[in-house]
Image (cartoon, rainbow, N blue to C red; front, top):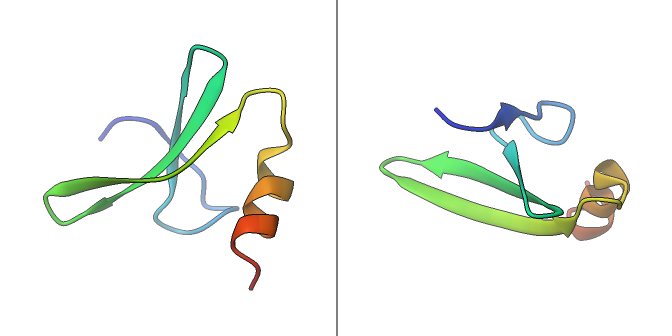
Length: 54
């Protein structure tokens, strides 16, 4: 698996940095699902909470 696990966001979410952005994604069976693309300077946890409130 590629990317770093981000269990503080969601158990199956992973992330990877690319050209000043952080790509949040998860694996769904044989697919890679991109959940969000966030500017690297943003607070990812705050952005996640805004996009996916519990």
